[in-house]
Image 1 (cartoon, one colour):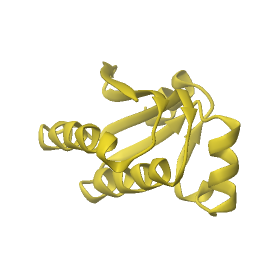
Image 2 (tube, rainbow, N blue to C red):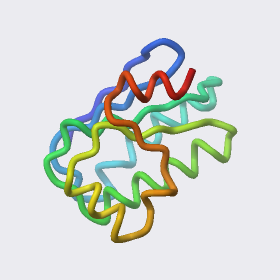
Image 3 (spheres, rainbow, N blue to C red):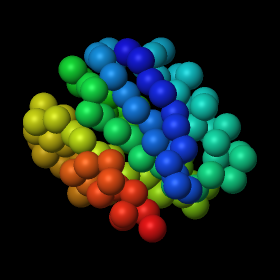
Length: 112
């Protein structure tokens, strides 16, 4: 899995690509998000457009990242989720736990 953090307006967009298979892969991403939070960042977008495969590790990453961000008074929006992740969120009843936007531009609008 690959990822990139980029600033867009006053939000940090975390672009995820590939297959998220283990929690070890997400540790560095969560660390970078924690660094952004400690620097005062409050708005985050997780862009899942490039994700090819998701499993329980992906769900764990999304839930723990949301918890990390909201504990510090921040907001997180998921966008560009694929059908597989959407079904997984529905089955686990987590769809209502997250703020979900269609596209990155929609997520940015939601954070304004």
